[in-house]
Length: 337
Length: 301
Image 1 (cartoon, rainbow over the protein chains, first blue to last red):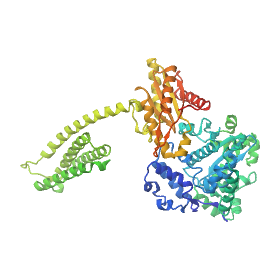
Image 2 (image 1 turned 30 degrees about the horizontal axis):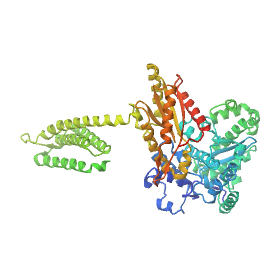
Image 3 (image 1 turned 120 degrees about the horizontal axis):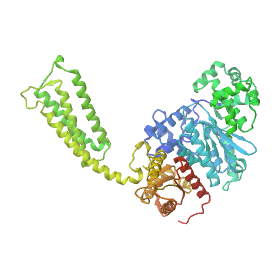
C-alpha cells in the first residue's frame, strides 16, 4: 500500500472535489469546452461519475477557473458549495456529525477525498481547536485560492451544523488582497500578516452538540468511509514529507535520512521533490518555520529553547533564519499575539 | 455581438471587392521600382486601423440606426483608405474618371456619416448614463464593476467614498454610508441553489436602485452585502433612508424559477462621516451592521 499520492497519481474522483468548481463555472454560464481546455477532462466523462483525475489536472482546472472568472469572490463561491457536496458517506459523516470537532476529524482523516490539494491539520490545546492548512500535493501558485476556498467551506459547514455563524478566527500570511470578501464571508476576525494559514475556534464551541445530528447515521457513515478508504493513500506527497520531517524533529533530519525512511534513493527523492516544484531545504525550512511560530505563539517558548529544539547553534542564528523565513524577527510575532 | 452584423460586414466586403475589380480593370500594376514602400506601410496602417475600429464598434453594439450610421461611416473610411493603398501598387491612367475619385469622395462622406453617428451615439449615451446615475455617479470603469449585478465593486466604493468625503467637506454637507446585508442569505443558497441566489442578488439590486435618491450611489460590497453612499444625509436622514431600504427589501416578493415566493429581511449598519479616513468609516458601519445582526429580532415581513 502506498502512503501518499503524487501529482500524477490518478486519485481524485472528478465528481467529488472538482465538481464544486465545475458546477460553479456552469452556474455562471461558462462554456464547458473553455473551462476544461487543457485539463484532459471531458464533460461526458465527468458526468459519467466514474472519472478519476490526477492532481495536475485539478490544478489546471483551478487555473482555468481563475482565468475565466477573475472576480475576487470566485474562491469563496466555490467554497460555499463544497460541503456537504457529493462525497458519498463522507458527506453524511460531515453533516450528521455530533459536534463540529467530530466533523473536522472526518475532514482530517479523509482529506485525500474532501480536500485533496490542501492538507488540513487539526491541533488541540486546552482552550482552542486549531485547523492548519498546508500545501498537500504540490507547491503551486494556487495556494491562496485553495485556502480561501477551503476555509470558506469549513465556515459554511459549521454554519450548516449549528444554523448560526461561529466565531472562527482566521490567520493568514501576507496582506489581504480583498478585505471585503473576507469580511463578508468570514466575518470580522480575520488577521493578516501572521505567516501561517490557520483558523481557530474556542474548544467548548467546537465540542457542543449540534442540534440536528443523528449519531447512528454519522457512526455508520464513518465506518463506511473506513472500509472504502482502507487501502487508499491518505495524503499528498508534500504533506507526507512535511509530516515526516515534523515527526523527526527534535532529532536530526536530512535528505538522506528521509530517503532511507521512505525506502528510496536520495536521487529518487530529489527527483520526486523536483516534480512537485519544491526541494528538501524548502520543506525543511517550511516545517521549522511552522513549528517555531507554533511554539512562539501558542506555547510561549523562549527563542533560546526553540533554537535548541531546531538545532540552531544559538538564538542569534535562529533569529536570522526566522527573519529569512518570515521577514520579521521572532519578537515581532510573539508581541503581536 | 458581431454575428448580429454579418450583413453589414458582407456588404462592406463586397464593396471592397468591387473597388479592387474596378481598379484592376482601369489601371495597370506598377513596376517594383515605382513602388514607394514608405507610403505602403503608412497607408496599410491607416487601412488596418480603420478595419479594427469597425470590428470593435460592431462587436460592442446591438442593431439599430446608430450602429448602422457608425458602420457605414467607418466602412466608407475603410474602403477609401483601402483604395488609397491600392493606388500605390496599381497605376490608374490620368485620363480615367476613377483616378483618385473613389478615395476623395468616400473619405469625406465617411467622415460626415461617422460624425452623424457619433452625435446620435452621444445622445444615446446620455440617456443610458442618466439611467445608470445611481450606479456610477459620473464615473465609469468597467474593471471596477461587479459582473453579477453591474454595480460598482468594493474598490469602486472606496474610491468614490474618498472623493465624496472630500467634496462634502468642501461644500460643508454631511455624508453617510449605509451597509445592507441580507439575513440568512446562505440558507437561500442552500435551499434553492446558488443560481437562484445569484438571481436574487440581481433583482435585489434593482429594488435598491429604485429606492434611493438620484444623488445616491449603490455598490455591491461583496457577497450579499451592499453599500449605499448618501451625500447630504445627516444621521437622521440616513437612519430614515436606511429604514426605507430595509422596508423595500422586506416587501420584495422574490419569485423563484419554480414560482415560489421568498421574502427576506435585511440588516443595516449606518455611519456618518466625521472626517475619519474612508476605511475607518467603513469599519464603523461594518461594526454597527454586525451589532444589528446580533441583536436582531425576526422582522415581520
